[in-house]
Image (cartoon, rainbow, N blue to C red; front, side, top):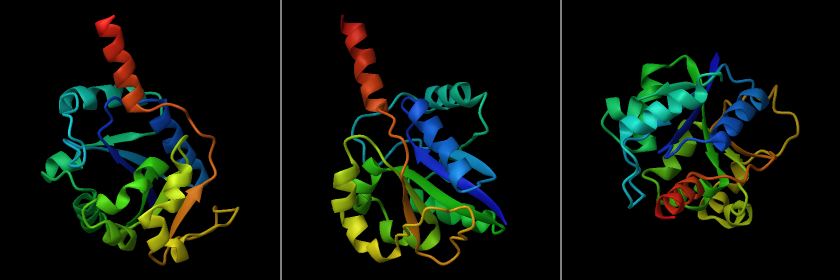
Length: 192
């Protein structure tokens, strides 16, 4: 069965941290592909991001030398919700095993996502450590709710991830960069 990692987000802007976790997931979980799902608008973010077209263009530019595919499924199905995107993809590609990739920062507030508990019952969830968020991720409502389904093994290459829910926190090198930092630096340069 083909294995695909899904990294959803605003990508405002995309950066080397997104590339790093995509390539790390591909390696650690022996994924055939990684798809970036660019959200037209994150329902939990108040500030409007850069235009969808600009973010999409920046994603294509950033990944051109990497084995990462940019997908517009959320725009196609007219939904900013990850759960709906996952359901759509599972119905469309029933021969693909999907992995939901995210940073520890997302695990902290994951319980605010639409149908958050059902996401764990639809796909294997993979969480990457993020500087400044890891201890709060371990204290999160989501971690507590799904603690018994978290796997803690060293070699994941032969682990099938077939029975759901199942999830894992990757012991990755932390990349100290975020889209928010990049936007703030850009705004300071414009003001200065």
